[in-house]
Length: 294
Image (cartoon, rainbow, N blue to C red; front, side):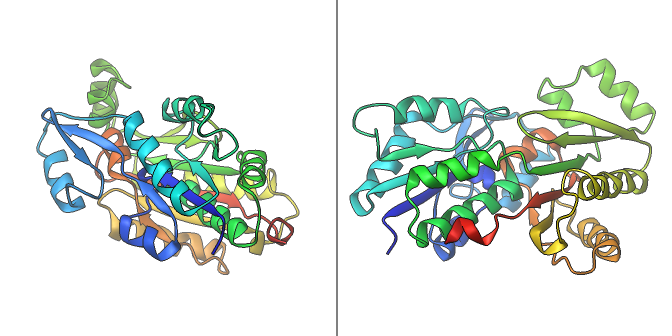
């Protein structure tokens, strides 16, 4: 057994069942529905969550309680010498910085290593899987942290939304801007490349938005990842209640990159709160080369 435990939060999209299969630990993200606390993947099924999301309930997200994070670390340190903890990007939540501060406490120094991986959803999931492979290969927690932070920006996420309503609800878009965008049938394309969620482009139809995202990935492959074989790249997709649209999108992507498997995962509930049903994402990530596992 590896002496290093790998842990993340549910913003990785890794379910509790999948975590057991992968041999990692997933801390469920908390969120509130009409003031009542729920833990993602524990207290509420995804079907129940989406039913509440689409019925205009008051839903907000939060970061894990410090006590829950420390309890997770303490449990793991009973069976492992070290813990690598990989939360969502520091640019999207303060939970990473908070965890880093607590990892500096005497009882965790040299034992818990918090990674600011600048990733979320399927790209964060890939980092967790790579961390587990490095741990199984005998790498120390600090070595794993250094690798993941060194390669953190070698990934892009492009997201299009079906509605602006949920950005408005979360205060990320003014009601006036949301109304104008809705009247003009604007489908925004957003980008996460590093720390922040930024506007990338605007489309009038989902077809146009998908083409913009495919062109963006193609540009990344030509420029950011120039010279790399496609075997060194992972293209993934994620969605919110739009599996059929995601399947069609995958067919379009495979026509461009036929050797890519292109796994599709649901976006985590804690992200769905802010983007709403119909959101569709494509990601492009450089894989770690074999030398990191040697």
